[in-house]
Image (cartoon, rainbow, N blue to C red):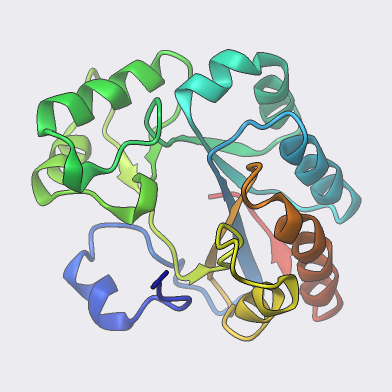
Amino acid sequence: MFYLVKTPFLIRALRSSYIWKINTEDKLLHLTFDDGPHETATPYVLDQLKYFNAKATFFCLGKNVAAHPAIYSRIIDEGHAVGNHTYDHLNGWKTSDKNYLENIAKAAGYIDSNLFRPPYGRISLFQGRALQKGMHGTKYRVVMWDVLSGDFDITLNKEKCLQNVLLNAEAGSVIVFHDSAKAWERLEYVLPKTLEHFSEKGYRFEKL
């Protein structure tokens, strides 16, 4: 499985209207969690964030919000941000523009947010522009990332996953984790150690 842990500047420059990293010199990090809510992983994440007084952004699948509305409500009640991640995790490169945008609109029936992250980071130019221009009264901000933890990679050991984050995150980084069954083994290990490490270095964790 090939993926880039640190997003190169050239890729960010080619899609400069998307959010990849926040321009700041302050010690701020932006943790993001994709694919939830999940009955085990998301409550664990919320407990860890509360313990470290951290805020984060959850990019939710519409079908998972429909299945776990109480967990979704807890995310919001505890002061975190939410974003649209399509209804059922569509790949924009493999989906017609019409179906892709309709799927996002379906998810918007459950997720009230102007933040959108494309599953797999795969979105066509037309799809991105359509979202930014405005759909059903919402102009979306397309959020990508600066650092990919790799927690979704079942071939990756948890120590390497932690190093992916600790060695690549810097002020303003947008970091991707997954509150999902697939990522759970690595997430459970990496998240508290990430929060502890950067808290000790004086970083704050803020939502987008």
